[in-house]
Image 1 (cartoon, protein in one colour):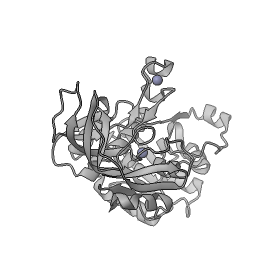
Image 2 (spheres, helix red, strand yellow; image 1 turned 120 degrees about the vertical axis):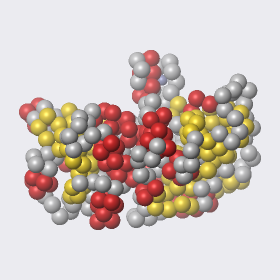
Image 3 (cartoon, protein in one colour; image 1 turned 30 degrees about the vertical axis):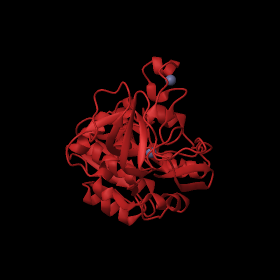
Amino acid sequence: MQAVVFRGAHMVRAEERARPEVGPGQVLVRVRACGVCGTDRHIYEGEFPAAPGVVLGHEYAGEVVEVGPGVSDLEPGQKVAVDPNIACGICRPCRMGKVHLCESLTAVGVNYDGGFAEYSLVPRAQLYPFSGDLDWAEAAMAEPVACCLHGIDLAGIRGGETVLVIGGGAIGQIHAQLARLSGAGRVALTDPVLRRRELAREMGVDLLLDPSAQSLDEMRAALHGGADVVIEAVGSAATAEQSIALAARGGTVIWFGVAAPEARSAVSPYDIYRREITLRGSFVNPFTHERALALLTGGRLRVGPLITRRIGLDEVPAVLATPARDDLKVVAIP
Ligand SMILES: [Zn+2]
Ligand SMILES: [Zn+2]
């Protein structure tokens, strides 16, 4: 079978591999779609550790081909989406119920062979069966949607509140829709790229802001003093500072975007204190995959327009090396 293999920083290749054999507790999945994620880019650049020789790809869905000994509740042909993150279950965060903050968290497509391949072996516990005629590429979006759902859970949006999303990439566009589904009275989105603002408008965002043309004061005024919830979905020091500045008094700020580990933002402790700002990070997808799939299969979320390109496995290395600026989500179809 064909597979996209990580050999080291800047060395990712499409290679021929033997189709894997199922072991106890495992399921062999015929991969139908696997999304290219920012994390894959970081792995390619050597900025995020991955096991050399591993098949990349952690946002995927497919069909069950064969089940290993001990797996009795799945049958060949069943559609499944993959939750890639595997917690150890025995460290202190795991035992405190925060499995996603596991001290030895591993992931399919990072530490074990993943979804940029025709077939993938997945532990049964990582699979979420689903039915219906959901498009495969959209089913592969269950993973990023599940991560966004965790951020939305942490934001605690109350009906009628104003929610601002900073960044109109695929993740920001998902957050904007989830904010609406959570009862936001007004959803705003800021992005310097016109196409992304236009897409956000098509997706139902009420207020579009352009940080390259509008000052912080102008944006704050457009938000009537600030947003009750601000979701930062860029991952830069500058937008992190902006997210606090654009929060209303008593507002909640979620830092969702993945910043470089060495990035630093200036925060005024007095400002956080005086305006009672709640600042929270949001990391991966603890027990949100089931709900993410429900939103997708139920047609409550529109992720189709976010998929700007479908490519073959052989094109994945080039996309990782030189991502196109116009792309939102690129999905590989093995
Ligand atoms: Zn990802
Ligand atoms: Zn653990």
